[in-house]
Image 1 (cartoon, rainbow, N blue to C red):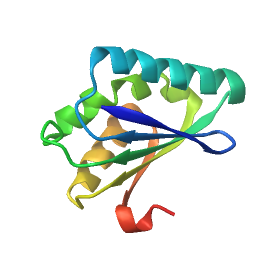
Image 2: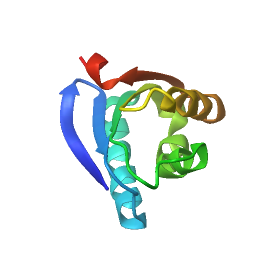
Image 3: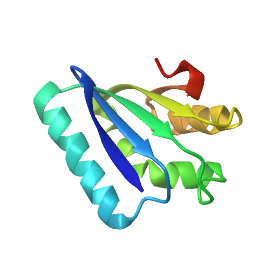
Length: 111
């Protein structure tokens, strides 16, 4: 499940993920990303990830964020904010395999 957080600053697209993302939601996210790219050419993405049962492996993260990889050449960088420090490794791996500069932050660093 995801929620689109209103654009917070210029070319920043903010998304909150709190459960497994369905195929329909993947399509909706692709549209949001595509629309933002059409408007700004290059975007930054903020993803706030709440812990959920299906988010217990690096593969699950990669699957949930596969639509981001599709547009990687238009994404300047991505910040992942989460509630489990061990997710930093997964965000780093995602950044490595997607080619997107990716940083991980704890919830208390969201600002």
